[in-house]
Length: 185
Image (cartoon, rainbow, N blue to C red):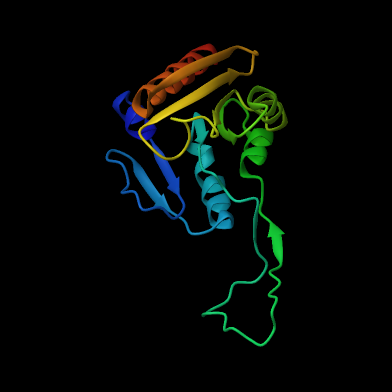
């Protein structure tokens, strides 16, 4: 995993994870959260300790306005309306408060990959974005391979053809190391 890759390079990794079926990687400080709001709170607590932040979580843009304590029973009504409220944009807030930290974001797109990635890189004040075209075979969340485009804050674009996720993690960490070296971290 990218976390194990960072730990193998001597980085102290703090992983804040939402619900997942994956086991926590070895060699990392692990914090489990249930909601986007809990993740937001934990990220704010931990960000002061970090030289760099890699935000790979696909945090939902919206959440139910009200949490039910039990099962919602079927009624005679044919429709059920669920009110949603916007979650905080954790990555954007980090970009506004990052100071001298390296900030890396991820995005998953199905079209206009570079255009959307550049927009997010600028909008969220990122140093590096890792963009996945999830419509491509061999890319995205499922499987052991990925196809990504790396774009840094200087506009350098690097296309990585299909390769193992471990190789992608190495490439991302190589770029993070370059950014940290250029920032004197």
